[in-house]
Amino acid sequence: MAALFVLFLLLVNRVHLCAIMKLDRYELRSGQSSSTFEFVSIGPKGSILKTIQFSKLGYDNIYNLAFGDKVAESDEMDDLIVTNNNDSEKVLTTVFAAILRFTEANPTVWIYAIGSSKSRTRLYRMGINKYFEEIENDLYIFGLTEMGWEKFIRGKAYIAFAALRK
Amino acid sequence: MKTIMELKEKKSVKVTIDKTLDKYDNKILFPKKVERANEMLSKFGIPN
Image 1 (cartoon, rainbow over the protein chains, first blue to last red):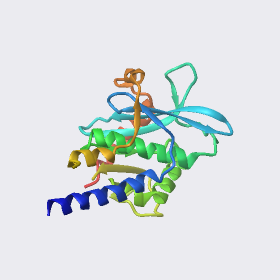
Image 2 (tube, rainbow over the protein chains, first blue to last red):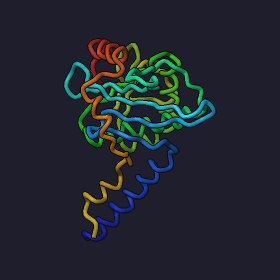
Image 3 (cartoon, rainbow over the protein chains, first blue to last red):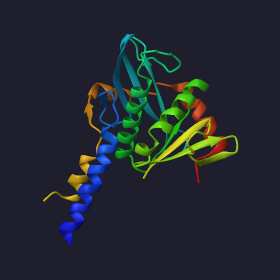
């Protein structure tokens, strides 16, 4: 009976692993706390260093997700820049991977995500729509409307997003 | 036989640890975004 249970876990784990692994993404580097990540976007505009950061907000257990391009030779970040490196989907799947990593290390935290512009928020929504099946293996996803929060509905417009580890 | 903990570890996203990024642990790199998120949080809270 125990062996069957372990076999079941192995199969579940394998299916789960396949869902995540099939997403094409960049290699991530992070600090020891898994709150700041970097990766290099590669495309027609060259190699561009990008930074992802999870920052604690004013309430316990809630973190903001932000990412953008690192300004050369400084610690400044630009989250408004449009890189046009023809890899926006790969960038988003890399950000999803960072969320998974951060919530592995901090499984009870909420993640807030708001686009730096309407077009960036739309890009987030499109990414969640496209990879929703993979994402929802690990995360509860919510969308914010002017009426408040609701469970994420594919195709619906939202002004912000929240995620919680399952 | 593999333990449940070993199975769980397999699910982990591969990340290379870079200690030079630790310097950002107490630094907010996207302050405007954090300010806006705090405003939204105070208005809408978190999902029920």
